[in-house]
Amino acid sequence: MSTTSADRGAGRPTLDAVAARAGVGRGTVSRVVNGASGVSPRAREAVERAIAELGYVPNRAARSLVTSRADAIALIIPETETRLASEPFFGSVIRGVAAELSDTDMQLLLILVSTERERRRLAGFLDGRRVDGALLVSVHADDPVVELLEQSGLPTVLGGRRFELEPLSYVNPDNLGGAWSAVRHLLGRGRQRVATITGPLDMETSCVRLEGYRRALAEADVAALDTLIAHGDFSEDSGEQAMAQLLEREPDLDAVFCASDLMAAGAMRTLRRAGRRIPADVAVVGFDDSPVARHTEPPMTSVRQPTEEMGREMARLLLEEIASPGRSHRQVILSTELVVRESA
Image (cartoon, rainbow, N blue to C red):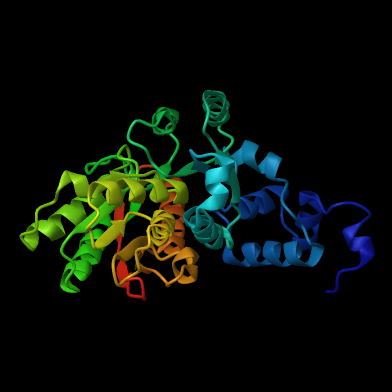
């Protein structure tokens, strides 16, 4: 039967209109819309056909009263707007999350939390059960946001982890293996004095990449000198400053492994200013394999981490936890790969 303007009426189609079209009771339509059991295949098919013919869209607010669901998840990033805009990592994770949710009824809410006021506002938001679960990326060891999420009891999945025995579900790249492969590559190319620029050491990601650096040196019987280690915060400016410190302390260094592409780009700028040729004098390796790596001069060797896949997997785990609240937490480690370009 074709749908006419009279069928649709002047306003939005109602549950009663769907029930009349399908020849079933209003309760049957409600059960189909809310995904409940107890509906025969024949009745379900009739309701779904009526919904399609009438163009019925469920009232999300009314539905949430019945199901106790908000049909929304929060992607929480405890960083500033400036950091969000400047680091390709975040955009890639967001794309992955959005892609995984595209075939669901879930709305994605992006929440930035970088001040105490924003944390208080987030606490009220979580207490109000305005989302069904939360994703958190850029995880710092003592971040109160994680504690807020734990106290809320909401299903939560982390992008990264606070420590090795993280009790919450998380998705993480193989930071140890990625850093190890980068430094082994530099040593295999004959580099003797390999420096590193770490990320912030209140992040497990940074600590594990530093451990990968040290492990590769130890396996090659090369000392990991403190003077060859400088610290940044994953930003380009911090990489620039850390590289200047390294050159001042160890002017004869011949390679540097940076814990992010942005820091590596900053390091390359400092090296050029100091008259060091890349890679003839100093080889450079980054971590991320973001678009930044392909647009430096020379193009940057970098450890590829699957950030978009990370976002997808985080969303997938969260949807499973929302659907099955009692299920055990899961930890997923994604493979990394060294992509060799001219800088090393």
